[in-house]
Length: 343
Image: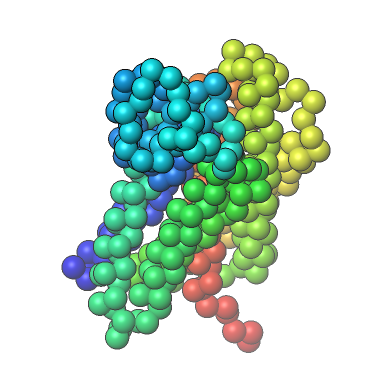
């Protein structure tokens, strides 16, 4: 099992990026409130498929904890009940965590699949920690990093609940995203420890400095992106999905900064590419970073000028998360390079 541990770490990283993808689809489709409660969905472990299931009806059995929509409000069953001809408020508690009371089966199941991807990743994390513990005598940092990553995954679960309870509050979404990137960083550090044997790269001072700047810039850009994304979500709620041309109507300063900041990111990362080529530093990841930068820029342009073509939002978010991961791993590789001694 120890020999296959690097593969297990890679699978864990992939599972986290699958959560990124699922979350991106949720945001792209506006399905964030497809399930008004957490961890259940309208009080069900398996979400409802028809509006009739969550609409109050007479002479119908409801189990304790089930949620219904009545008069554009959410109500929770206080106990197992069978309804009479008229609605009896004493059997129900008004859901007070938020006032979002809509049902769309597509949004509900999109959000539910997102949650399932998190559960699957959680199981993989538990297995990762179990195996990592076996390395405690060889390298104490292996189980420590695995345990911290698992703790952050649990924290992410709580944040996911908070996101729903606050009806997609922008600041909570931003923290949710940054915490996910922290998990990626921990797993990549773990992968680096168990995979990288010796350095095959050359040292270059300017390259290393630009690399640190590129990682910081990506974190800033992703955090800003979550804020811009929230503005778009609010516009979609206001004008509807059929009027995407209004998604960026009168945007805030954050949008313009996010758009213009791309120029700085492109320059820094193309500087890394240039130095890697002319100095023959040997960092193969730089080529993939440049590809992702181009993909990020292209999808950003398409979203702004072509009214959000299908899939561009999810691609934009996922590419940004992968870009950060590659930059962070490249930074880890650069740290292992020995600085030449002055003659």
